[in-house]
Image (cartoon, rainbow, N blue to C red; front, top):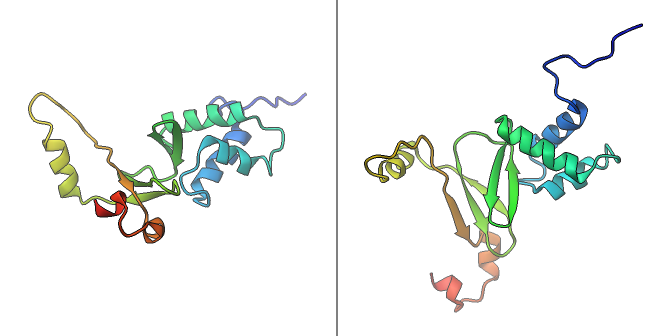
Length: 145
């Protein structure tokens, strides 16, 4: 009788985990929510539950395989784990990656002053993306900022 047990370094539900990771890493969904990942993976794995997607996304983020962006009432996930910042459009909800020069990032960290020992900074810009900016009325408060 063959032993079909998973290898010791293999996490439970690894097929589900791999599909979820591949879905986020594909970049096709941008910076998806758990619900968006769930909708995408159900086409390939109809019996997967939303809870399984949430648990695996949390585990993947904890393991450093993906990044979690906490944006108030919703978390989004990012396949790019390198240090970078984000821009969130207040109208359409799109999230964009923003690269900040290393010297500017160091400046942010040094602005903390004495006693702090930060090794990273998370910056989230918010406003209107180019597409939504074009749709704003010329004299709205948001456009005058």
